[in-house]
Length: 283
Ligand code: AMP
Ligand code: ZN
Ligand code: FE
Ligand code: FE
Image (tube, rainbow, N blue to C red; front, side):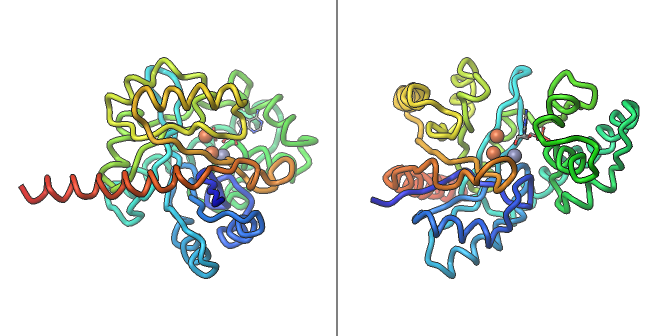
């Protein structure tokens, strides 16, 4: 049996692994295929692709776009993205700058709480274009301003806490369209985590291609529920560990193993979407 992990993060967003380290871990767990899905960026994909090619592992270039629909945050995974697509790059650059500004705002809020964290410290630690709350939490720990990551979120960073700053997001419908324009397939990430079932029909109408049925935070019952939903709406099925490296506990890679038959269906869907695009362009 072959397996895949289609939800992984690296240092290009808030994971701790380099793309090369990630591929080594994937190899150790015997995965046949991985997708890199860093938040709002595709920067790590070229290196991950090279590292995968070197060990003959299949690689799918992806990203996890932070989006919203009717005031609900929803993450949209894009697979088979053309990482050079100018529209995609321009759009994600805008959301990366939103993320960078938000770091300044979070640090200002922390300073107001008497916590002397500098934005520059967070940027130096993050060293990527898509910084986020996990980097602020790590910087707080590193500067010994808090005991651990959990406490950083509990005390300051989670929604409603003093240093929580909302993030301007693209609309989910825009995200799906953007992924399609970049040649990708759009998949709703961890629906069980955000409890966003009621928006699924709208996303399907907007052209959603798949749904992440298997995820670290999905119970067996949840996964079964989303498999039924996938069947009902004729959606592709994906899954992944959402591994962020050594952030909290042991790396999650290897804990969610997507049966390869689903990857085959993704390839087939990509092929048929490309054929449709070509036919439309030839008209
Ligand atoms: P951001 O995109 O900057 O809002 O950060 C979201 C990321 O923070 C998520 O992908 C999680 O990895 C992490 N996160 C969110 N809430 C918590 C929490 N309570 N404890 C630890 N990590 C969290
Ligand atoms: Zn993350
Ligand atoms: Fe997510
Ligand atoms: Fe993720």
